[in-house]
Length: 172
Image (tube, rainbow, N blue to C red):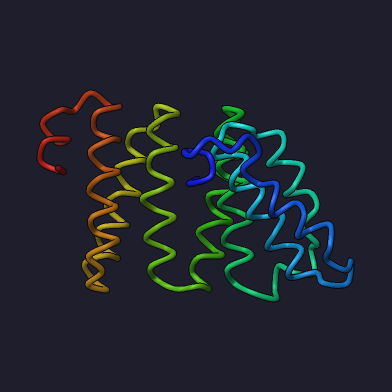
């Protein structure tokens, strides 16, 4: 993201070069690079490019490291949202949440508060609110100030999108 803000024209070029140098047998490293490139692509609003990199992630890596599964379904959910595909988003959000459970409570809270903004953007405000409730519950239970702050910030956005300005003010 920093590369984008300082004006580099191809923010993932260094990762693409690393990927080209990696041996095909380096499944986990290649998966992490594809996921990094996919995450950058979807964040910069290139969902087709992100989807292409997701397709290159070797399925054998899904059980190799919990972070790979979490990031894969995170990016896949973002791609589904970018294409306004609510059914695919729901499936990927559920898979993202399941993957996060294997990674830890901080990751689960992140899925909930990040997922909430997508649910809100689809106009699914009750689902957004439920995800915020879950994120706040986990944040408080684990005493994670970071997760709680992120949940409140996302809640404010979700409440504005639903037209509930009073709840947005409270969240801030």
